[in-house]
Amino acid sequence: MNYFAVAFLALLCATVEGHCPGEYGVNECAAHSDFKTVPTQYADLPILDLQTKWAPLIPLKEFEQGSDITLELTPAYYLGPSYNTAIMTYNGIAPPPIIRLKAGDNFKLTLQNGMGDSMGVENYNDFQLPNTTSLHLHGMHISGGRPGDEVGTVVNPGQAHEYYYEVNPNHSPGANWYHPHFHGSTSLQTGQGVAGMIIVEDPPGYLPDQIANMPEINMMLQHMGLEDLHEAANVSGSVVFEESSMVFGNATTETGNTNLLVVNMQYVPKISVERGKWYRMRMVMSSIEEGLAWEAPEGCDLQLLAKDGIYLSDAPRSVRTMILAPGNRADVAIMCDTEPGVYKMPAVSRGRYFEYNTEGSYSDECEWCLSQANVAVLEVVSSKSGVIEAPLEPFGATLRRPCYVSDLTGLSAEQVGTEYKLDYGPDDTVNGVAWGDEPRYAVNYTVGSVQQIYLDNNGKHPHHQHVNPFQILEIINRTDMVEFEDWYRDGDWHDVLQHITKKSKPRIRWTADDFTGDMLFHCHILSHGDKGMMGQFSLEGESGTEYYGAQLRGSCVSNSQYLVDPGDDGDLVRPGVVVIERRPIPMWLGSLCETYYMLPWC
Image 1 (cartoon, rainbow, N blue to C red):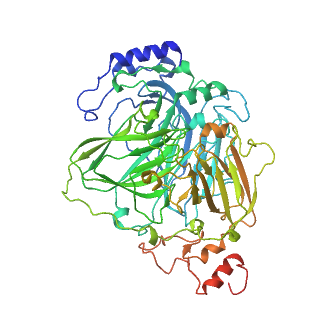
Image 2: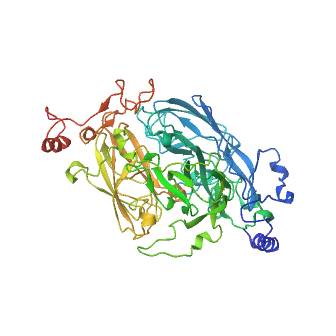
Image 3: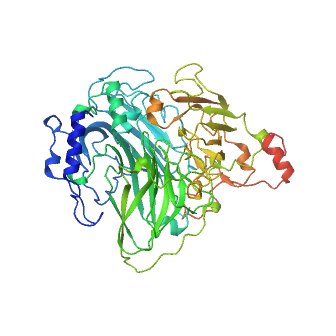
C-alpha cells in the first residue's frame, strides 16, 4: 500500500470513529453506498458484498450429496471490510460449498481453470504462475496418486482435470477441507478465500444421540493478509490481487485493518445460539500464515470433540481456549447459560508464532490482536423450550476406530522405525534441502509399518503431512499454562501441528497405511511451502497393506470394513461388520507378535 493510500485511510478512519450505532454488536454495521462502487472493468464479475460488521453468520452452501462435483477457478469482486478488490473464487462464491461425504463413497470432481491466460512468470521455489492451479483434499486419508489427491497435477488456464477419489469404508468421520496446491501459487489462491470445507459424515448410530443431534455451525476462518498477498501477486506477475486493483477505505466497519481474520468471509459476524442449547461448531483455519487462539464468552461451556477430523479418545474434553494453527480443524461443542445478549469472542493470541511464545510467560496484551480484538460476536437468545440441556457424557473411549488411527503411544522403540528428525529451516528448506533438490525422497518407508518423526523448530513452522495423520507421542518444552496445554495432549491425532511455544519439539508417530506412492509434507505457512519448504516420503510395498500390530492392541476397523454397517439401522455391533478384535493370547506373546507378526501362532 502506498503512502497516500495509508494517509487517506488513516484520515478516513479518524473521521468516522464511532459510526456504528448502538451497543457493541447489537445492530448491524452496514457500509455506506459510497463504498459499494464496483470499477467498470469488474462490472461483469459476481459481486460478494460482505462489508457489514456484526451481520448474522451466513451458512455455507453445500454441494448436492452423491453427485459429481465441478469446481471452476474464476474471479469475483469482493466488497470487504476495509478494502474492495477482485479475488479468485471457486464457482464465483467464497467460501465455496461444503463437500459432504459418507465413508465408502467414490466420487468424481472436475477442476476447471477459468482464469483466462497463463500470465505470470516462472520462479521455481518462489511465487509463480498465479493462474495455474491444482487441488488438495486436506486431511483426507486417500491415495496421494492419480487419479486421486495427486497435488503435482498441473491445470493451466483454460484446461480442466478430472479427479476420482475412493474413500475407504472406515474413513474417520470429521471436518476436512479442500484448497489449491500448485507449487508457487498455493498461498496466493488459498489466501484469497479459494478454500472449502469437507465433512465426512458420522454413520447413523456411531455417536451418542446427544452429540449426533446437535445443530451445526460451520465456519471457514480465513486469513486475509494483504502484505503477504501483495508480495505473492507482485513476484508472480498476477493482476488479480495487485495493489492498483484495490479500493481502500470503508467508513462503517470502523477498521483500516488490512491483516484480517474473517469467518465465512465476513468481518466479525454474529453467531446466534439459544440459551442452554448445545451446538457443534466445525471450524477450519484456512490461513496462509496466521494462527489463532480465541475464546468463548464467560458463561459458555466449550467441549472439544475432535481435531483435524479425528475424535479425541477422551471426548468430550473441557477447554477454555480454541487453538488453530494454519490448516487445523476443530469440532467444539458450545452451550451458553447466560443472560440473552451479544457477547465478544476475543482473539487472545494470533500471529505467525502466536503471542505466547516462551515457556511460562503470559501477557494480558496481545500485540497482534489490537487491530482485530474479536473474531466474532455471540448472540445468546432466549431458549424456546426453557430447558437447559444436560452436560455431555464421555464417549470418545468407546468409539470404534479405524485401524490407521489405532493408538501407537504404547509401542516400544523396537516396534517403530528409525526416528526421522525434521527441521523446517534454515530459510525455506527442510533439513537444509529445498523442494525439488536432491534427494527426491527424504526417506523410503514400507506400508504396514509405524514411523516416528522428531519435529525441530515446530513452534515456528506448522507441520502438515498428506495421506496419513499422526499421533502426538510427546512435546518437549511445553508451557505451564493449562488453558493452552489442554489442547495438545499426548495421544491426540493431527495432520497439522504447531505447538504454541517457539521452542517446542514434538515427537509424533504415524502408520504408513494402505496407500503406496508419494507422501508430501510441508510447512503450512503456505508462502514457506511455495518457496521450497516441502519434502516427501516414498511409501513402498504392496498397496492395501495395513499395520498388523493394530489388530493386537485392541479392536479397530479395517480399511475394507465400515465403522457401522451402512445397510442396517446403525447399531455399533452387527454381523455384517468385520471388526478386528484383540486375540486371546498371553500378554508376553502379544508383545512378541507385535514385532514378529509372521509367526504362525500370531
